[in-house]
Every structure is written in structure tokens, then in C-alpha cells.
Image (cartoon, rainbow, N blue to C red; front, side, top):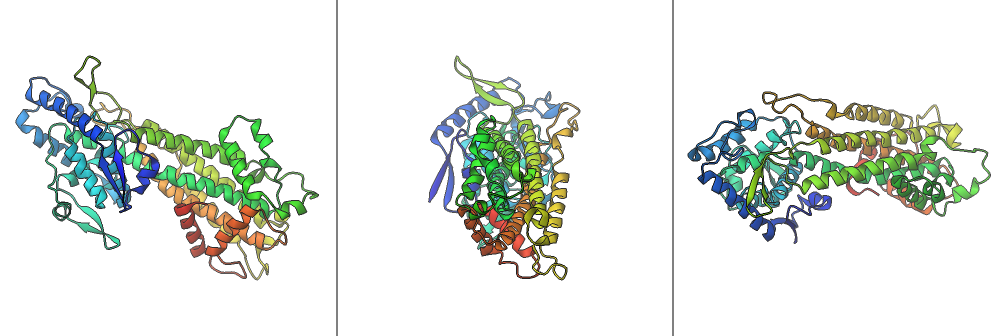
Length: 503
């Protein structure tokens, strides 16, 4: 059994995606326990003293000037959680909720939030036992943190709300009492500041963006593979992938992509047989694929950096920070604002649209005899059969949906809390829609691979070795085309394969 030790500094995308794997357990580092206990002691000293400090013994938001009596602080934290747990919409997927909870635990493990280690231990016990709080998707504005979704998570921690538990191979609804009995723990009784520490952070955004960057990386690799298949399918030129071209432009992504595509094309008999072809240049969707795919690669790389930086950050408010001369200060700031994640997510949505847009153009080229030199729509008996004509239609419909979803969420700003919170990022909205965008995109890439495989079946010469291997993958899921049939199941099966494994 593997173990991932959270220290607030080193959580990775790979570790986040392991959540839900029963062979991996998450725990809190000893270093984090020490830092958390130290900052907690400072919070308790404030509670016992006369000082008024926001987030510890005051109200919240525009009510931050109201001081709360010490004997009401536990009730204050409970009220905060319950009042903020007013999300709407379908529940988050249970695994997404567990990732959100583990990410929140890692942020708290930095020791700057003033929360007790035992609260995080309880969170990790729920993650490890695959007991996911029921959290509605909609409610976060991406500033002041993901307040409503995290409040639903916190509500489950205090024994309210509901859970989805993975038992006997499926997710089932369970009551908090049953869940806490199964993990041999009592629900958490929140102390001063702890409710605020739980709900005031970017953890929902991070959970969505972490998953999206993981899926996008697979999409990027799959799109490069699909492009290589398509190049061979139309007997296209290999020259646009020559490393000497890309060495002359200082764009890292296009160099990576050109190298990837070229590696699939090595040993191509198709290319050798068409060296004297009359076609001088291929269409941009082939010739410029390193430049387009490479730009997407760069956006994915940046979004991955942004989300991992935030996963390993303290994103609540106020923060308990060390003084150089010793002791602590309680500082109010804006680390909960989701703008870095929101802008990265908006860029990623646009990038995935471009990956699909150029893919659909290659599908179109392969289905047209003037470009492929093959039968219209790759039908064996054109007229009587439609071949793969409608696969392009479906890809175009998916792209239309992606384009709708890819509208920048950051362009919306709705001030709240008596206009004290007057600029918000809509980061959760920006990040959540990426999951649907990725799923739609995988269908477009799968469609390109299916069309390319059908075109390659009609050629006498062998494609590059890498393309031959890709062709085998497609044919293990989608049999050769020997007449019209429904392709819906095969497209979905290949799409699922690409989202699970990539290429």
C-alpha cells in the first residue's frame, strides 16, 4: 500500500489523480503537525485575550466589524458553515469532491491557517475511506474562495449533510452518523477560525483544473498521434515536421509536438512512394499542426504550473504568518482570489477548442478525394453507402458545443457582500466547464483517428511504424469499415480509451 504524505509544499497532479485508489493512503507530515499546532496556539491566545482580530473573534464579510464573545465562537463557526452551505445544481462527482478535500487538507498543512491537525486527520480519513460529502457544483464566485462548495464539505465534517460512499463497487448515499462510525471518529466540533479556514480557499477550482490539465495532457498527446495518422492517410509530406524548421522559431511547444509527430512517421512506405507527388504543399491543418498543437501544449504546461502552485499554497484569509523576530501576525489579504486559476482555465478552454478545430479540418480533408486521393467519405460503395460522412457532422457539433463552453468566464464580474467583495474571478465556473470540454474534445480526436484508420486501410503501402501501432489500437476498439454501420459506440469507446490512457 502506497502513502502520500501531505506537507503543503509538494503535492503533484499525479498524486491528486491517485485519489480514489484504495491502495494509496494520504496522511499529514509531522512537520506540518508542528507548524499547525504552533499557529493554532497563536489563535487560542487571541481568543483568550482582549484583541479583536478578523476571522477569529469577529463576523465575516461586511459584518467583519462585529466582535463575537468567546463563549459564542464555536456557534459562530457552525453558523458560518451552515449559512454558506447553500449551493445549487447537480452534485460534484464523488472523486472530484475527494480531490477537493485532499487539496484543502494540503493547503491547511502549510500551517498558516490556525486549524488543528485533528481536523485535517478527519478529512484525510474520509478521503482514504472514499466517503465523499455531497457538494452541489454551483455556488462559488471564485473569490473569497469556493465558499459555498467548501461549506458543504465542512457541513459534512461537522456531521450534517450527506455522504456518497464507495461500497461494493459503486457509490451509495450514507448518513454522517454511519460514515463517522465506519471510520471510528466523531464529527468535528469547530473551534475559533476553523470553519473559515475550511471554506475560504481555492480548492474546488484546483480540483477541477487539476483533473482538466491531466485530461488535456492526454488530449495533446492523442491529437499529435491522430495528426500523424492523418498525415499518412492523405500521403502528406513529412517535411513540415523537420526539426530544422522548428529550431528557427523560439516556441518550445511546437518543437515538442513536431518531434512527437515525426516519431510516429519513421519508416513510412507511404512517404517513400509519394516523394515525386505533384502536390507541393499540404493544407494548413497538416502543415501547421506543430505550431497549433504546440501552442496548446504550452497553454497546458502553464495551466499545470498554475494549479500546482495553488494546490501548494495557503489560500484562506486571514493567515497566521511568522514574524522575523519571532511570534506571529494575523494578516488579512486576498490569497483566496481565483484569478490565476480562472485565467489559466479560460486559456485552456480556448486552446482545446483550437486542438479540435484543426482536427475537424483534417477529418474533412481525409473524406475529400481531391486531398486524400481515396473514395468520397471513404465509402466502399458510394451512393448506396454514406461511409464516414456523418462523423464529420458530429465532430462539428461537438466543436460548436466546445465553442459555447469556451467563452471566457473571467469576463463576468458580479459584486457581492454589500460590494465589499467587488471583484470576483468566476474561477470555479471557468475550471468546472473544462471537464465537459475535455470529454467533447476526446470525441473529436477519436473521430479523427477512426477516419484516418479507415483511410489507411485503403492504402497499399505501410505507414510509419508508430502510425501502424496507433492503427492497431484503433482497430482493437473499432473494426474495419466494410459497410455502413452505427459508429456511435465505437467513437465513445475510443474516446474513453484516450481519456483513460492517452497514447
